[in-house]
Amino acid sequence: MDRRKEGAGLKAEIIAVGTELLMGETQDTNSSWVGSRFPEIGLEPQWVTIVGDDLTRLTDIVDRAWCRSDVVLTIGGLGPTLDDLTRDAIAKMFGEEITTDPSLAAWLEESFARRGTTPMPKQNLRQAGMIPSAVTVPNPLGTAPSWWIERDGKILVTMPGPPREMMNMWTTEMAPRLKARIPGQAIMSRMFKTIGLSEAAVDEMVGEVYGMDGVEMGVYAKPDGIYVRAISKAATEPLAHKTLMAAEEKIRAALGEYIWGTDEEEPPKRVGDLLKARKYTVAVMESCTGGMLGSAITDISGSSNYFVGGAITYTEASKIAAGVPAETLERFGVYSREVAGAMARAARETFGADCGVSVTGIAGGEDLTAPDGTEIKGGTVFIGVAHPNGVVVEEYRFPSRRALVRNRAVTAALLQLAQVIK
Image (tube, rainbow, N blue to C red; front, side):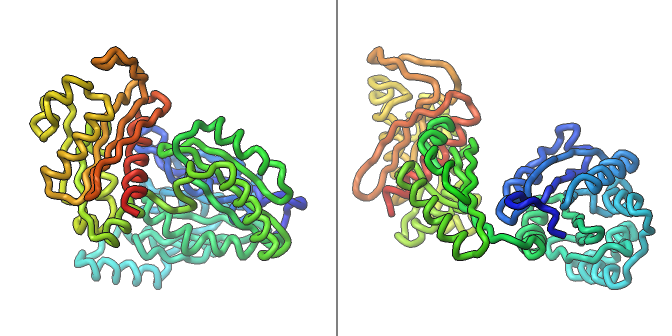
């Protein structure tokens, strides 16, 4: 099924199914997540289509994708209700009849029994439907098994819509199967995650890598910083690995300490691991991030072992009530190194934690004036970390867009904490 020209990937596209996606009720994060992983296995993303729960339109979209692409992935529409139409559309497109697979029906009934939900609603038998062209791919995290269809030199697969199920299905099943069927080259990739630089600055700094033979580069703006993806392609894995390592050496030399992580690494997990290793606890006091820092820390399973509490102090009065000296606020202003340090100390003392982390800054686009007359630009954030040996306060300048400032402030706070306690 290798229909590529030399050096090109297989044409691939994604069909995201669901009226809720079209109406904006649910954001289509699945397509971007999967699409960003296509190049790692030799797929060249060509199209992403969002289509509602309408059988005629969905059938037309699936048919068009099948005609023009080598690999088609559908996401969603595999549930038990009558508006879950992905299976029906694929069957109609191939001119095949859906019949109930007895083994799938038995598996579904056992799944419901294990969860203590009996009897199973008859509607769920829709999820046991199969066509002759499809084989089943089990879904251990849900009740919607996927289809794998391989015919006419092409592949069509279905994946569940819930992100947790979809990510697991891709990682454990679909990506390995697809990679095994894409011959002719070894592909390796690495993502480098940076903070503190603009997208244009990162792109300029790694410009030398763009000219490397066998390396594809991409620079992407994300809520928590700028990412750089390097993909190496070669005839053998050792050669691909050698090329990727050469690219990584250049990228690290260019970006240095602006790189905070690689691949799937996330700051909350790194911080949690460090806190557990040091046997430290942490508390937070937040202003412009409005609770997002505490939320990020507690997103990690087991965070109750080290996170002891937090306060959202959005006004001067609330900061004073939480332990920030009124004279510090009056003298230096809310958006200052001194107040950030006082907030971090107050968080540590109030909650009896080993470490206190604070965030204060201007999330909006307006510029403000400090009590001493100094102009403070929109996007300026001060982050303090109080720890057993003192207090560290850093000033950050983020692009002055509210959502971006808040997200990057959270990442910066976590990374600053990690740097202090590592």
